Length: 328
Image (tube, rainbow, N blue to C red; front, top):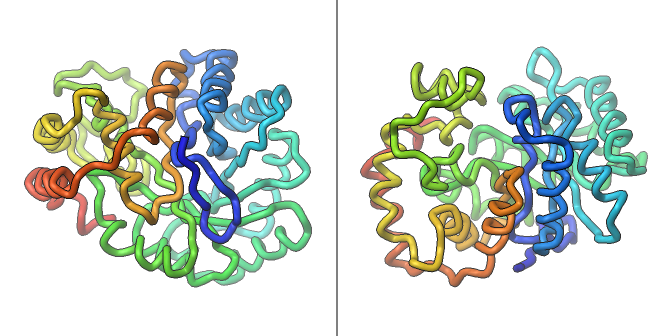
């Protein structure tokens, strides 16, 4: 496993982390023990960053992470996220309540990293919110603060606040704008980048052939049948990374020929992301130990060639850039 510094936090984190968004009601077929085993498998593979949020399974993910860490001796870095209030912004009361709940579920005295969880754009223009994060640090309730964003512009605004040490953002071969408009600035400001939705809801794991029967409660079904904005995230920007399903299938078809014989499409995608030096860690999520091991192994692949990166860019521009590049 490769390890990288997470911005100014001075934490050395695994290049491949583990995301736990899927430990929630949509994935209720995964038992508590299956989810715990996926976390254990990640730690056994050298993963030392497990990302979570209070809303994942209504606290279930944080609780299960806390239970696994209680069993183990490893020093594991656990970023979590505070949900915005009903107005999609963050009040002091809401932030303090979120931190208190996460502390209890994770069973710790201080949270490693608290990230604002994709509030609306206006929230990034409210300095008082970031003052509360500074207060929580001073009180010893959180060690570090960051943000999770939907848009590049939100990320650029967030790092104007000194308290923000990390940004979590969607980035993958179907969503390339962050590399153009944000990564260099983040490196200059010593801000850690955590990449989420790396596999575009399975598109970049080569999991679909275009004729899938998704369950009625699956956000991917909504996006396939009713268009991008029916997916999850602001304006549907998280389901399939905000790409129309058919366009995503066409892009994957184009990219498939570039995948080395000794790698899967998912590993190829994760390696492509890690080839961007600004990226601190990428957090694919899975409750399958086999997939967790496979994802972790992507960090050991050789960097991709300039020619391969160019071909990925060509596929992006040919199939999906017109849908996503101007939006996020």
